[in-house]
Length: 386
Image (cartoon, rainbow, N blue to C red):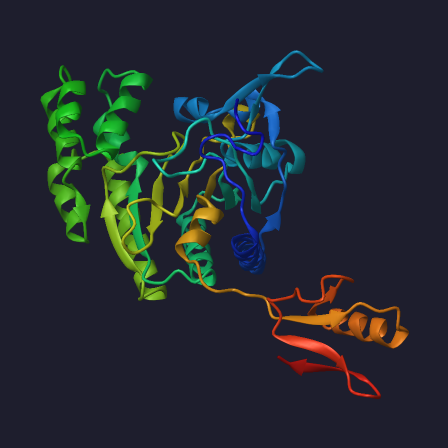
């Protein structure tokens, strides 16, 4: 018999110290986004499956829990990513003509964990710009992502960039279907040369050679020079390399402390990326903490194919664990009493932002986390350092 207190695999409680840290990070990230003019939205946890998966590809489909709505009999899903929901909000509920900046923060639920020790219930923060096709929106989103990273205390960050148009340019005119393209992208992301060779067997030799080249095109600025020499002379590839150079130059000027690199074969993740994309890594980490980029087609299925670019912090709970520091809250302990003067003193302290713990009768020895106490000095209630 399974114990009633056991949770499902890869699902965990967040205990007080870490929960406090996560909540501080959430508020900080929303404040940073607010300073950029982003408006907060709160999409529902549950949606009709057609809406939740529209335009996202098979990867998100496999990650989404599905169930039958007892009210309508329709299949609904629990969100595994918020971006399609925010695109729906922009397209149908706000329906603005100009630029719209939206941000969000909420839990997701995935059918499978992202890794051996990953969670199936990440807490995702994200921000999206809708309505601007120019590279200026990409630059703003990268700025916001790096400012968010800085706000939560992540130092020595690395920004890796790629572009979805590169593979599209390589495969332009090549007879491959969506499933084979997805498999090729997965092999590229995994740097699996043998699998890539097997999957590309039968493609034109130029496409096979270009795909194999992508496996080696990662590193510094020299990668872009190599790409110009090794990849086909296709307008999509030319535009992608030009934009990556501009984005990298901007980041280095604005954030000289951030290491900038490229991985032109890293196209894993969401299937809806249409242009430049990026990922932010912490020192010593192989998993991205932030992912983002341009995905202009994400709103097409909702009837408004608006330009869109954005990013998300993959999981605030994981980020809090990586940046775990002692964030003990200074508290004041006070005795329990009906004394009006004591109760007034406690209220005043709380109104000033202090945390005051009143020790309930019979538990006067508790309050170990307090660094001060409220005591009566004979005429007033005063705070004394322990």
